[in-house]
View 1 (cartoon, rainbow, N blue to C red):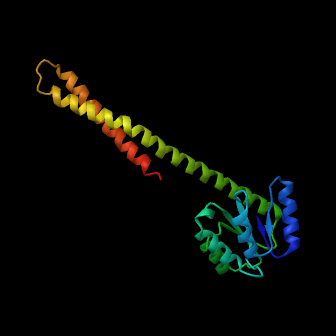
View 2: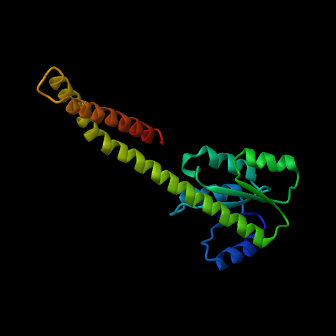
Length: 193
């Protein structure tokens, strides 16, 4: 989504991005941006946000979006005429992921957009893998608990029996130790959340 109060910039950037096969939404102010984001049928991947807007500024838009859990994965590139380092730092502090000053090079902006979209894909993959690890840990834990319980029970029942070869008891102990190591791995998988 492009957010700028200058129709010429919206038109130029829309043409550039649509030429690269991106689907483009746009807003001319901060409130309009927030409204469109909250009612969009599909999640928006990236926001190119002007700092100076007629209603609420880009800082406030950024601040509100970062407070909303639904938009934590939204990439935000601030695009503004303000070149002061203090302004750039303030933009990054309120949650912008990148900051580009006007006038800007279209190819540089495209490169930054591609980089932000790459980061978003990696974050989504990481979240998917973490969820998968948690699911797997639950599926592994149930049979593992049974293995540990049965190995301990067998070991306790056979320890006093002189007819059992010592290597059987050693094997049971090894099974129990291996199962406990797997339990530790399962706990670490659960911690990925």
